Image (cartoon, rainbow, N blue to C red; front, side, top):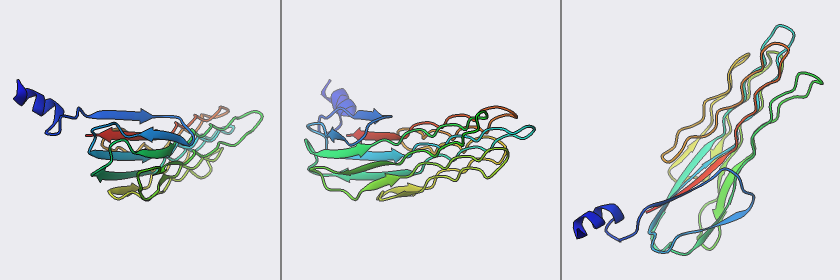
Length: 194
């Protein structure tokens, strides 16, 4: 029985825990007692798609950037501060309102000191077959910093970036002719403790 528990709980006796957030502004994350490693993943919100014109589709929004850091050692009980970026809004055909980009997500030091991780939001798709939304950039991760995928001109939003413990939101789709564009998705912050 002890052997089975060691496999399930790991050598330290700590059962892995995942905390996933899709909203939150300047919220505090407290590392569970007994954790010795945290994998932090951060995705920016995705941009909304542009509205469609009289005979042309709108262009898709970009997906958010992705950043990852792994910290091991005496982390138990310490804190980090995180923010989750908002989803970009799709463009509205009438009255014509342009789409908006996704918001930036971040994780920064609390009582545990790390380099600030930032995953910027994807750009908005332009209306009526204009420019597609750019993918959001990322910085500060010690293991990965990946730019999101751009949307498609007169088409779909950029695909969300896949991480270890989650996948970012796709950008909003470009609206069909004489229609609204699709909304983007919110950012994502994941803490995986082992």
